[in-house]
Length: 133
Image 1 (cartoon, one colour):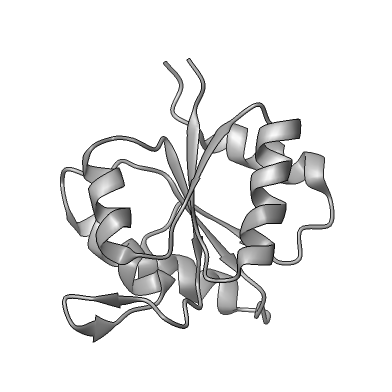
Image 2 (spheres, rainbow, N blue to C red):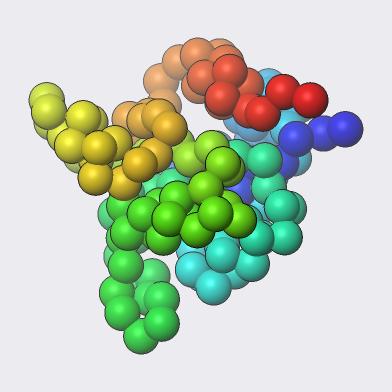
């Protein structure tokens, strides 16, 4: 059974790069959306095994409010139906200390910085957080 990664990313170039690495090198299936309602539906329907969540979603709105990846992660982690879904934050703006505060604030499971330089490490990191059967 192929595992599915949901990529929540508003930059299509990044989303394509991630998709390619994950499918070609990781042997994973990929979904991509920046639509928050869709993210919630996919999470609740268990159609993804793990989420790669961009921290700075420029255009995302949920229930009439602008939301970023931290907020979406908080919503997913607060819902018992989706709390166990692993979420990896992805950000290009990683200052020292940001990582810890993003993780603490959001409740995410891990953190990856953009750009992804080491593709194998990226894939390994995702595989290591995937729920084991």
